Image 1 (tube, rainbow, N blue to C red):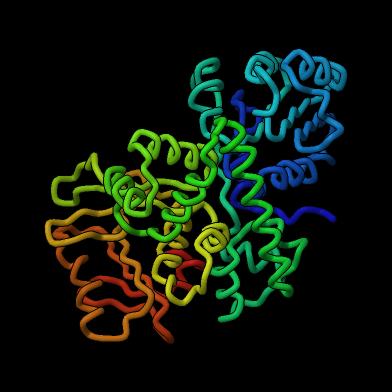
Image 2: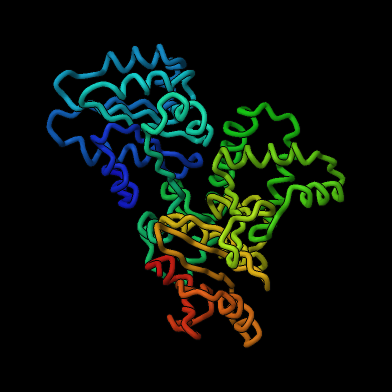
Length: 401
């Protein structure tokens, strides 16, 4: 079956072909990096004088490629003269000293390299040290709501939105289907265990796995809340887990390296500067977060919406911070080039008090940048209060601002 093109990423990859840059697809395991590589081949294989060398380290046929010397031998044996050679390596971090090969083949004529990896240190250390700025990172996220509808053949509806908010956007669910809830959660659980084992526990030689799981559950329960390492340490001690602040910082770093979590810094709106202490945490995929948190979704809806909006803002190309005001907090300050917007997220605006609280925070910002409140208030239509736009979650996820 031909892959469904994720056009947003296809356009980004194609834009860097022939530019002399190594294209690096990063992101958590099972968010569709391999899928994008396969789609790239399908979209370009009919072009004349092209040759694809595709190595997927998650397939047993490539188990023998463990070092960069073995990688070189395989690539050399499959290069074609007088053709444009595309070298595609999936989960490249599984090959020892892979970066030496990548650096070498980047210098070949008529050769483009696309690699994927599931650990952010791959860029900051190995690749960044050896080739400096000669690479282009493309961060791959799980499916957007629009992609979710496309992949599962769903019409936009209350039920479809609920499934997205509940199960998340792992592309592999397309093969599982959404009709059998037990199968859906079994698949998500399998992805979770793979990420934890291969990208966190094994990679970092972690022994205290029980605490690792407890800490991740804590993060799942505190989406959208400002956290400090000291406060986390105090909470864990109250639960009988006496772990040093330094260890908590290391574990959080492991989660971030595997793209399971991301942190969002605070931004002083009045002083126009980043603040050094306290940050918020969000999950890369809301389905994984819901699995870890357990329980029903109703009581968690505010957290879920905030996480989903955050991920969508990243897809739209914004750099996202938490807004800090003297009188309170704004959920997101979003910047892109010279553009800035402010976003407040709430589940329902069902009373005048709630409306005053959510809109009031934005009204306290004395500048002319656009301001939005996003909610799931039934039948809400795009409207404004003193220039602040109120819009429904569904419209935002489908059409942006």
